[in-house]
Image 1: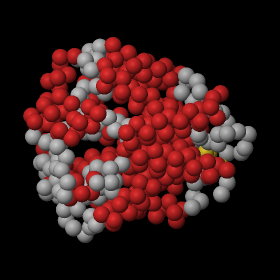
Image 2: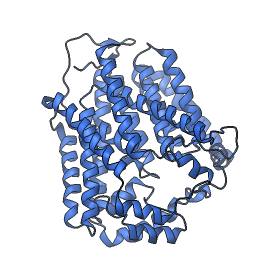
Image 3: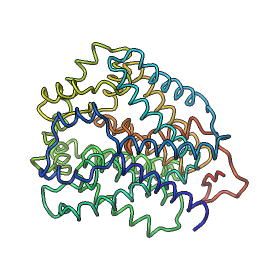
Image 4: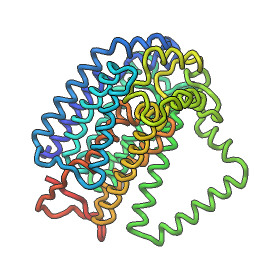
Length: 436
C-alpha cells in the first residue's frame, strides 16, 4: 500500500467512525419495520437535551480537522469570488445568533457547523482524486455496516415487497450515502482504468442497494447526476457523439411524454412499500408539500433574515408542526425551505450563489485542464443541488451536508499546489491532476 493509499484509508476510517458514533442509529431497521416507533415528543426531547454521542462525534471530527489543517496550513486561502461568498455565508450564520429567538439552540447548532467545517476544510486539503476516494470508501463502509446490522437484527429481507434497506440510517439518508458510493465509483472508473473489476463491483452493488432503499429522491437525483457526468464527459471528448446522444434522448423522452405514460412509469419505477412512516401519494411528494406550506407560513414572519441558523426547529415547533401534519417532523424536507427558515432570503440567496460558483469553478477546472475528478465534483454538486429540493440532509451534519461542505471548501478555500510529477493520462488530451 502506497503512502497516498494509506492516508486515504486511515482518514476515511477515522471519519466514518466519528459518523457512526454520532449519526448512525442501529435501531433504524426496527423503526422502518414498525417494531419501534418515533413520535414528536422523542424528537423534541433530543433537541432540548442534546445527545452525548453526537457531541463526542463532533469533537472527534473537529480534532481530525485540526490535525489535517495543521498538516497543510499553508494551503488555506480565500480563492476568488467563491471563497469570499463562503466567508460571507459563514459570517451570516454566526451573526444570526443576534436575532435568533432561541440563542442557546442557535449556538449549539453553530458549534456543529464549526466542528463539521473544520473537519471538511481539513479533508479539502487532499487532492481531488483522494477526496473522491474518501467519499466512496465512506459510502462503502456504511453499506457493509448496514448489511451487517440488518442481518444481526433479522430485518434483512430484500425479497419482501415491503422491504426498504435502512442499515443504520433512515432509508432516505442511506439512499444518499449509496448514491455517493455509486457516483464516486463511476468517477474513479472514468479517471483511472486500474482496478476496473473493483470499481464495477462497487457500482453494481451500490445500484442494487440504492434501489432497495426505495428512496425516490436519491434515485432520481443519482440518475440525473450520472447523466450530467456522462454527457459532459462525452461532450468534452467526442462532441459529435454527444450531439447524436442528445437527439436520441430527446426523441425517447418526447415519445414517453407524448404517450401520456410518464407519470405512470415514474410511479411504477419508484414504487414505495405501503405502510411506511412517510407513505403518501406521489402528487404530494410523499407529504412534503404539506410540510412546506406549514413552514412557509412561519417563514413569512421573518422573511429577510429568518429565525437564526438551524434554530427554527425548537422543541415547541417540532410538536406543533408534527401535530398539524399528523406525523413526527423535525426538518423542512427541503434544503431551500430550511435555509429560508434559518437565515431568511439573504441566507438562501447567498447559498444558491455559493453553489453555482462552486459548480462553475469545478467545470472550469475540468474544461481547462481535463481533470476528470473536477467533473466528478461537479456531478456530486449537481446531485446535492437537486437532492436539496426535497431533502434537508444536504445542509445537515450527515453525509450529504458533509460532502457539500467538503467540495465547496475544496474549490473556494484551498489553494491548489501542483507537484512536478508527470500527469496521469487517459486517452488523448486528458490529464489528471496530481497534487502534493
